[in-house]
Amino acid sequence: MKHRRRLLPIALASLLTACATPPINNPSKPPKVAAPSGGLEVAPAATPSVVPVQTTSPSEASAPVWDKLRGSFAMSDCDADPQIMTWARRYTQNPQRFEAQMKEALPQLVYVQQSAEKFGVAGEFVLLPWVESQYRPVPGHRNSPAGMWQLVQSTAHVMGLHVDHRYDGRLDTSASTDGVMRMLRDYHNELHDWRLVDYAYNRGEFGIQRLVQQHGMPPDEPAIPKLPVPRITREHLTKLLAISCVVREPSRFHVELPSLPSDQHLETVEVSHGMTLSTAAGHAGMQTDTLKRLNPALQGDFLTTDTSTHLLLPHRNAELFRSAMQTSDDQSMTASESSDAPLPSVYADDSADPQNDNTAQAKPSQHARTHVVRSGESLWQIAHHYSVSVSTLERLNNLRGKSLKPGQVLKIDPPGKSR
Image (cartoon, rainbow, N blue to C red; front, side):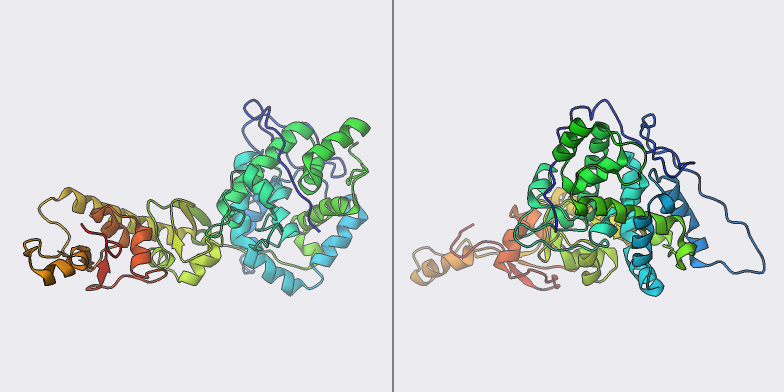
């Protein structure tokens, strides 16, 4: 059962930056004093020693990623509470299955880690989507939570995430992750305890604030504060510490953490104009289904800058997409500036005799503009040239999800509209 979450007013956001503390020497006592502004103090990645007689395991190959995450942890470790170990063992009771699930989630996990570092949020919260959804873009139905962060629509609205039948910002990994990290940072500015930040995420910040006013700040021990919160809220924190425990000591649970090549790290790519998802996938050198899977917020087959101005792509595909977009923009600029080289079109003969009944009857259809597609032209270029919207061309020519073909004749004006 999910609980409604609300944002607290950001009264001190311009003055304070919440930061996680360095790795804990006494794991049973989570520190509560925020570090100076400037982000998390992340321990440098350990340099694995080279042993000639051994091959490098996947966990060693990915050590910099996981070591960086461990170095940003700020709460208690595996042995702080028996329930933490209970849940850690439950997560890893099938090691092969756990490793497969973590491998599938790793691109999103690494992306979330970058956002957490940017906002100065404790590393444990990078693993929060594991507790909520195992990083899966869960679709929302009616008023149910959605996305890997499991946000309800009211929270999404306050966070500035747009939701409609074409786009659901809760499923937008980039926008929702930055929104959640900003919210967690602000919770910590108010509550000064990362354990309470997790309580607030699950239960609502105002309710946790009232509990603190009534009962005072919880002591460092036990690791799971004994405030009078629902069992599910206490269990939420336990689960978060449990998956963090597995990341701290994977060998303790007989699992190996996967690796992710740098060219598969996800990044946000800005989109300057609307296009079909198949066109975007072609620009990025990938299958349309793969692009949709990485960008589940897009509900249809068309990307419009009215709702989203970016795509989330692996680094290697992002480079291809940027190059294609630059080429497209350059061609569009050249076409618009060249007055002596208009795009070829098929127009009606304006010299037709208006007294001729047959001509007069045909005039509406003749004066409706059309365009013959040239090789390499994009729908945006054509729409820009004729000063119409891309969506209009899509609708008039039934192009949703379809690519243009050289020689194809497009309708430019709606039926009955004269030029």
